[in-house]
Length: 353
Image (tube, rainbow, N blue to C red; front, side, top):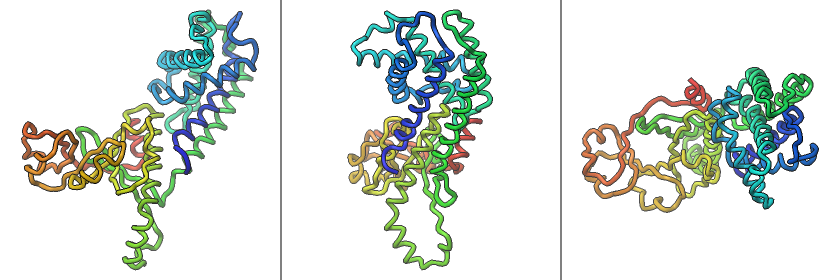
């Protein structure tokens, strides 16, 4: 797949949010609105602000994705920041001070659109709960007295919910592109303090047991880097799902093969949750090659070997860790503790529990 997977997903999200906001603008209104006069003017503003919000803040705070009022309180400031940035580009930096009620209306509309989307997402969303919570939110906004909200307009709401269902089907198709029983990642716990998962790529070939082992080794070598690229894409999707859920985002160790193409992982949103796993004896080959944080793995049992290094993270076997005097070392030592292996959906369920 060409381009960043997350960018492709965000591009879809931006279009979805813009359309949801377009519908919600007909439900959530304000008397004497001087920021826009008609649907066309609103759409220009909507597209500009939503592009900024979705690009910068979409994944940030989805903890209360099943509680509409709490979600609004959590995220409305992020929308306001997007509004400020949008109007700065138009040389109108004081728009929020000059039009407080109108910018509040705009932020409520875009934030409500974001709630509709995130609360019904195909990872852990709940379409029915989203519907009832949105109605509660609209009634709450109407009861504040500042905004006029047509929260009982069934025709517009049903049109919105119909569109949500269509977009949910498209989102499922997007994620289904990365589901296969023939190739997938396994994520095995290799440390509990900190919690680290090692990525293992599984690729199943039919009737491989009947093939000559020399031929198998030849093709493994030829296609290894291509297989790894698929594994990296699957890992990027896994991390993106964890951000959507807004549960604990795990840290994953990626065993490094020289000259691997890591473009799928070199993305600001997920980069902090990835560590390259490199054998300690190859430190000089890889230390400055990649723009990722590295954890080195020492497979030996010689304590003195670790005294040679400083200011690096090293994963060591539990037996060696128990013998070490940490105060003598200038490195950060992580104890290897092998735990369970999980598939993508297992981790999502585990975090939800």
